[in-house]
Length: 226
Image (cartoon, rainbow, N blue to C red; front, side, top):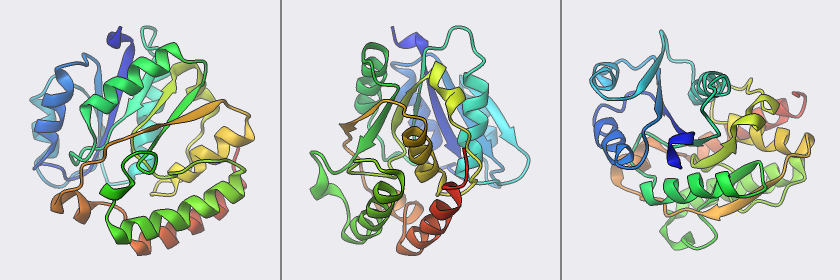
């Protein structure tokens, strides 16, 4: 059943983690698409040695651009039924990815958003909670949604629904843009809990307070998009 679900991993300078992330996912998923977003370390070389479909950006464009490239590729695949997005820094649980993959194939909803705040709120570092709570507040208000987590990199989308999503924000704000479009186009959605694994490595790579302000600026821009 999981051979109908494609895992999409945006990658930028993840030479320390990407091999183990792909290895863990490969135990359950046969279709993994990695978008190398202009990495300047050895990420591309490592990915070329792994059993993944590799898409390359010649320069770093941003995570939103990487996800957009992956969406456009997957929505044209005849055998694909859905996509699950998965971060390259090792903070996501493969068990969660399996749960999301099975659920998106069986549920009526078009999109499943991951949430760190349904069951595992205590795992989220304090400063990250602050940044995320601000983004969630404004995202829900602007998009008229009711989500507990607005910027979780683990989500699942049915393939036929990818054509309704047009990502034009290259940076972190693309997550809010997706939510805005889901609401504006009356796409059905729900949340599932995720067990995000925070390490010193992933915390250094992840969301910071200043990024929350950048995301809010991008969110204002996204209101004028499709």
